[in-house]
Image (cartoon, rainbow, N blue to C red; front, top):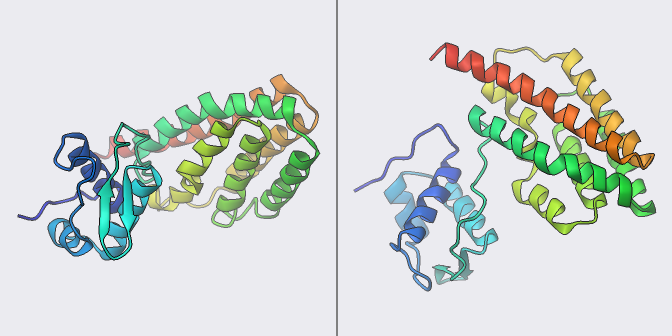
Length: 239
């Protein structure tokens, strides 16, 4: 019997969630081999790419180990991990921004207090890269992420960096704005405001202004929260 995955989340994220659930409930115990790629493709009616992305994600979390030519096996590290983030789900976007406020606000403060010369060089490079693409909604996504990652690195606490790396560039919600709200034209005033917010974060860290860096990061994320809250309200109004 085939299982159906719903389109609200990306198919790979849904497959990850489904396999996690089966591992958590004992359907697959530590040491068990997962069904083959072809079996998963047939069961869930998805592409080979979706299956491989899901397996790769579970392997990165330490839940699976793969043996070339043999298959994927469940490890004994099956405790609950950070759930996959789907940036096309507005509720997930708002939850992620809220989470980022808690994490990145403090990371910015630590970065201002702890940054060294190498950090300052990296931050300048990433800020200049971001500034060069500030008014191109698609081109600035990766520079935006790299800037936030540089802030996390400058905090000199490996967990800040690991969280940013685990979630990846999709942590930048604008990366999917054309999917979430395809009819909304590009707003240059919004992009200019975002760039100004990044500059305030950058300057505060360079100046060693701990409270200023925290305040600038919080204001930046609250601005995003307001915008995506507006999208969410509009989406609910038409449902």
